[in-house]
Structures are given as C-alpha cells and as structure tokens.
Length: 418
Image 1: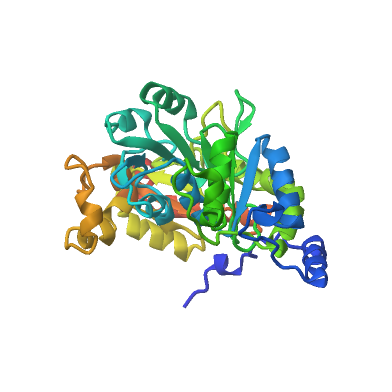
Image 2 (image 1 turned 120 degrees about the vertical axis):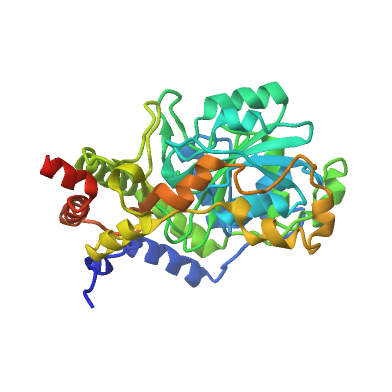
C-alpha cells in the first residue's frame, strides 16, 4: 500500500531549551504547585502562575488573566461565574467541540443552538437573536478554526437584552480585530484560550480566561480553587463552590517561555495559511478560508468548502483522492446538537431533572441549524495547519496535490472537452 507523504510531515514542536530550563528550575525548587484553598495570598497560586498571569494580562491588554489546567475547566468557570441557574438558557454554536456545550450542561443550564455564518463558521447574529427568550442568560460565541466572531452585532444584542457574552476563543488565540486593535476573546464579558498540546502555544494541557470585569474575575478564581473554603467572606455571592482547576508551576513556567515565542509562531502559521489560500484561490468548486476585512485569522485549521454540484463527486470520494495524494484532509467537524446526549440520553430519562428544566420551545431536532448541518455532513473539509512544521516545499506539494485531484473532476473534464 502506498505510504501517504503527509505521514512524514514533522509535527510542529515549539518546545526547546528555554522551556526545559524553565521546567528544571521549578523541579529544582521542588514546589510543583503552590495553590492553597484558604484566605491567603496563595489562594491565587505560586510564583510562576502569578508571573505567567501578569505576562498574559500585558500581552492581551486585559485587566485580569487566570490560568487553568485546561480550557474545558476555564469554560466551566466562565459559565458558573455569570450566576447561571438550572433552566437558564445559553445560546451557542452547534459547530464546535463538545466541551463548549457541556460547560453549560455542567451547571444545569440549557444549551440553545443557533445556526452559523456560512463564511466564517461562527455564530450568525441574526439566527441568535431569533433564539433569545426571557430565559436567555448569555451568548457563548465560538471562534472556530481561528477566525474571530463578528463581535459588534453581539455586543449590541448584549446591551439590548441585558445578557452576557462569553467567547470560546480556544482556536483563535492571537487573531485580532484590526479596527479595534483588540485580540479575539477580549471584547466579550469573558473570553479565553486553550493552551493544550496542539494549539499555537502549549503548556501540555492548560487554558487561560481573560476579562476586564473584577467581579467576574473573582468568581472565576473561586470556581478554580475550591471557593467554598472561604465562602464566609462573600456571603452575598452565588456559586462559591469550586474545583481543583489549577495550573501547576511547571506548566506556568513553560507558558512564560511559550508566550515569548508566540508572535513568531503565529506569524509563521498565518504566512502558511495565506500561502495555501493564494495557491488554491482559482480552483473552481473550492472555497478557501474567508477572512473578514476587519480581522486577522490565526489558522488553527485550514477550512475548505466544496461545491458538490460543480465537482460532481461525493465528499468521501474527494477525501479518498486527496489522501491518496498525501493531503492530510478530514471531512466535517461536529454538530453537537445531534450527539447522543441530546438525541437519546435525556429523552430516555437519564437526565430527567435536567430535561424537565428545558423550555418546551427548545429542541435538538435535526434541521434546526441547516447551514451547520450541511457543512458538517456534506461540504466542509479541513486539515490541521497548526499541527505540522510545514516547509514551503511541503505547502507547494499540498497545493500541487490538490490541483492534481481537481484535474480529475468533472468540472475540468468538461472544460477540456469543450
């Protein structure tokens, strides 16, 4: 069997001597974590956690940055910090990773799915507004693939309906709103990023929450570190129970070094994204990643939309051809509302209490998000541009391989025959 050349791509690795030295300093010191769940300074962590958070605040130009052992933990804390009660609704995208949605379910909140923009794959503000009810507590935006959400319409909805904006910017770290000179994830009430191993910068596992709201930052810090231990100090606040969502000192020390490298890492990945887009721009039946004029794209993934009417192939057959040519391409992303949890478990009574809190107008039937569903099931393909250490030669080979496949399609055969 032919060995696909993409299996020989070198996995991108930005961990070097700097990170090793930083980790060794922590090991030599012997304090691998320095959190204490008590009303003392160490409630917010040790030396390296504090230093990393200060660096993050400065980099993202926010008032508060809080590290976590994962972005999933960070999302749970974000949702808990807005005083969500059982039955409260949060509108979000179905075109995302499951952690986005289960951060809502964790607090017995109700995920309400709105459709996405066919160009950015982020939430469509018009679709979102139609889903707002008296029970809506927040909108949880997802900056998928590295493209920021169209934030301005959502800020208007937030003001109009007095609801919070949480931004899951896990994949869009470093992307910017050029017209506002702000980073993705920093313009809502709360936002944050993933620092796990396959993101732009990584601490192995990790996440960071950013906000300019002091009260939200305090609540997030309580959820992160067993806040019930000092609940007596804040009797008027809700949800002061918490978890061990704390980042260790080794991860924080590595993060400090990664953050120094981040601008160069991001620039290189963005250069790769633009190079691929330019090389594939004129292929009929293929739509390269859209980048809004007022944004930059961080290219966590390189998404492509195919026109099935033009190419006259099924997506599966197209993927097979691309993979045989060595292109690391995958089909679809995810439609969270169609996962078994929403389609089977709740309705069978496993989540009877949870289901009883759901507004009767909320449903998770197929067809509620037609754009997201069609993309996932039929027309969306992508590959993980952020995962590999591509050379220019690699990228040219990918472009040429895709062009080679495209020459086999009906659209080109007809052109050549005419």
